[in-house]
Amino acid sequence: MSSTLDLTLQLLSRASVSPVDGGCQELLIARLEPLGFVIERMRFGDVDNFWALRRAAKGPVFCFAGHTDVVPPGPLEHWQSDPFEPVIRDGHVFARGAADMKSGLAAMVTATEEFVAGRPNHDGAIAFLVTSDEEGPSVDGTRRVVEVLRERGQPIDYCLVGEPSSREVFGDTIRIGRRGSLSGRLTVHGIQGHVAYPEPAGNPIHSFAPALAELVAHSWDQGDEHFQPTTFQVSNLNAGTGVANVIPGELKARFNLRWSPAQTLDELKSTVTGILDRHSLRYTLDWFESGMPFYTPPGTLSENTMAAVREVTGRAAVLSTGGGTSDGRFIAPLGAQVVELGVVNQTIHKVDECCRVADIDLLQRTYFGVLNRVFAG
Image (cartoon, rainbow, N blue to C red; front, side, top):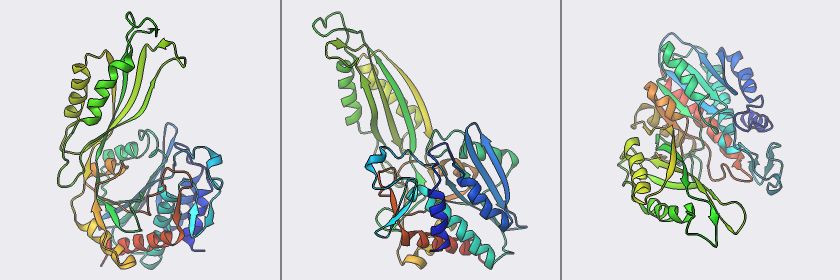
């Protein structure tokens, strides 16, 4: 068993449903401290984070970034095995977090161990930024650590985020940006009443339905040369008292816009409220902005990452801005070049999440190749 697979299994054995870390970070810290990393534990609220830095006199600051928290496993009876007792079956590791993204964290650490052992006096600095609040609200995690780094003037030149970027096979996709995320919590106000006497009542389901149809059918934009078009999705819709003879007094909906820079936040909000107003709804709407779009133009880091992927796998990775949000959105504003590279993402957040055992070692070799190229010379 490789050291990367062994560390992956150790991390997967620790239940760490967001924002709980479950001891994962201390396991990583115990591997980094002997390499000369100075560790800063940063706990904000219920969230554990750490910043680790191995200093050098000159050269770039390269940062590995990732998260130890995972999403809930869902109904345990739907899993073939315990989601927090990893098993290897048919050449895959099965456990919650196997792909998203404990295999990535393990590969970062073991790649760094190998690199430092071979080049203990390398120029430049290696850093780790690890949080347990990526799958949750993302308020007290990387966002807060970046605020501390900005206040002290700590630069990050290059950042590799270990999110599972690959789509079909390892190394086919490298992320160099993400769309923004804007969520809304909508309450449509009606008048409760008896279904047999609808005249004095006001059914919020009926009044919202035409507005919802227009929101779903609306063409927000065509995206741009780097980003997919903006999309609108309703994630929750609730109304009613649970009985058949009562018109509900209100409807609650949660929705999300994944938006390209072809839009602005103000334009998105005004479009939504304009549609709601056009249908004469009485409503309350609260907005939650969880991420601005970010984009790293192809450059030194993406070229080095593509070269490392090609050396290890023979594949020519595609540079993409697809997918959901990531903590790269908080790191990019520091001026860092940001890329995301990890294992295949087909099972993330699903029952029986897994990743190929072989891909874990491919990822470690690729991360090692990136380090060699960033600190060449």
